[in-house]
Image (cartoon, rainbow, N blue to C red; front, side):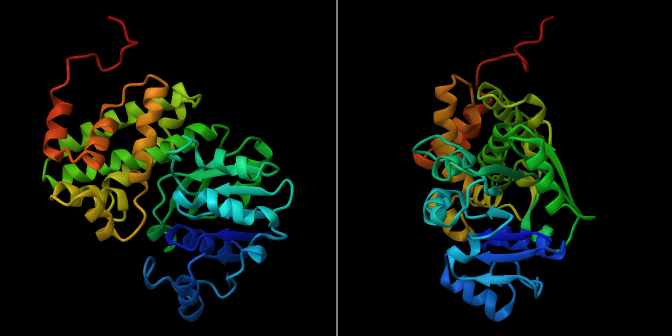
Length: 335
């Protein structure tokens, strides 16, 4: 049995706390939101995000960040991406040297263009930071619907420790050394999912959505490999796997926000309607800036940014994507 602190009690943090508790670990679940803590203590259920899913009695709901961090075998960072840096700063005094941390949020910081693991390493330099990602909606994980994810870590030893802690008969965990590839796949697929939602909102067909997802994988792969990720990763769970589920699922906040935008909502109105952090909106500018930094073509990401931040209509964005110059599907294939 391991002692585990889960920082962030949204849908994903709560779902993973349930997985870990049912695996027999000692779990403390912390939230910075007082009303969320009160609700979890009173009802043993996240009524807003995971209704009718009861927390195991063994999960301790924690108000104090210090207690949630100290003397833990593993810390799970499950706070939304815009709050990873600020949370890391707050918990820094309480984290021991060599602490294993697994980040499960997805995003890129716009100001620095850093991935979330890079932020954690900067704020908590003496720790061992890993990532966990894949096609894994919290709504299904919390109900023990079979799910598969991948853990990326700097060493095989750390990856296997995390794999052993999380894995069970319905939550299968693979390991990988490609942290940057896993993080970029998990972040940029949210931007592509916004566009997929727009296609649904415009009531276009399966052909259009399949084209969008396929070319989205091409964009993710180009940027990811330019930044040092491995091409195989983008064909795996955190690449095409996560893209498929995020672009197609009713649970996807990014797809749902895009759907509303396709129906004529502004980005702000769509986010307010979804009532959760829409990670793709926060990652879109960063993805565009990274594409320019690494001189990588990402036309879907460009159009999503124009729709989000420059009031371009969704129909015009789609038309511009389809009217681009002729080109080969893969530039490195010869006749």
